[in-house]
Image (cartoon, rainbow, N blue to C red; front, side, top):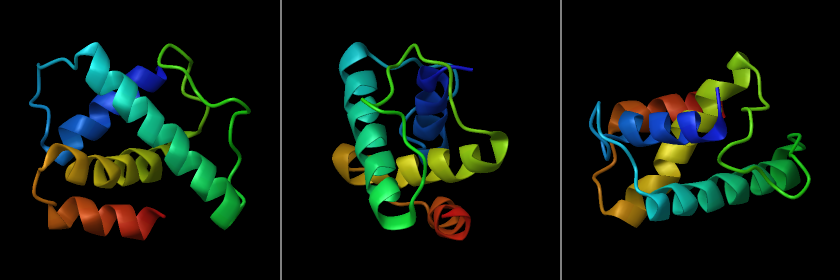
Length: 99
């Protein structure tokens, strides 16, 4: 699985992207920037491991399945305000629980 795959999943989890839709390159780049910023903040706040220089869309997703859910759901939370989407309380709960 690639970083792009996980970004797509965060968009679907948030409801911003419907199943079967694809992201354009601008949305993918914006989400990648949000993901790298989020992970850098986690490194500072929680000591989470972060790839030096950040991730690229085509990189293999470097985190295990235990961390994947936290990353995807918290990225979804980062995306809501940027896309003007209402926050889904279930997504918010999973994001908080897994962080």
